[in-house]
Length: 293
Image (cartoon, rainbow, N blue to C red; front, side, top):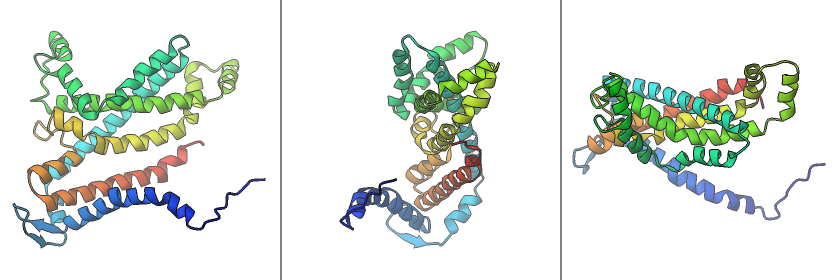
């Protein structure tokens, strides 16, 4: 028989959830409302006067070819970061799960990059790939490959993808390792007795049982690629060269704080919020069907 907790004070449940509701209202609902409100106004260069222009900012936004280029860059960047970080983290988790001696040391070293701020992660990889002085750039030069991310947009994209994925691998590793350790060993041993090889055991037993963890990390990593990689883009490439790495969140900053187009920047933030919400709902609506709980 299940016991049901009953609060004697009818106001106590509301009091307990009040801090979370207040935080949500102050740091999400109110900024979202302000962004939506600002997107309907056009301010002068000094920010002293604003004019209500309805949806003119959105019309200008969707008629701007640079915005569609930024949208494509964001799609490529987010997919690359998500796939790379998840695949590398899963591989490392599988390898760490098999280690017996020194397992704690291996796991600690693999978790350490999570403590590094995104901006610092970008600077670390910037030093490694810096033309002329970077270790990796020098190694590429010895192999007759000309590396200069300052001039080559594709190379710049590769650099920021590597930096962003490296930063997120540790986070994914934690969850994948926990998921692997929660799988009953009896299932894997039974499959091995039946003659299933390591690859078959992984795809028929391990990976399906990891689907809830994978689905959760898929949602988190896409949100991370859309928002939390701003520091990496800002310090490594500044959205260049020729806007080759200008993702949507960096374009909001560039047009709003540097270009002083507050109305257009607010319209971009509203569209960005709508895109992320739509992607998250679509994942829960269609991808979650394949999840085995």
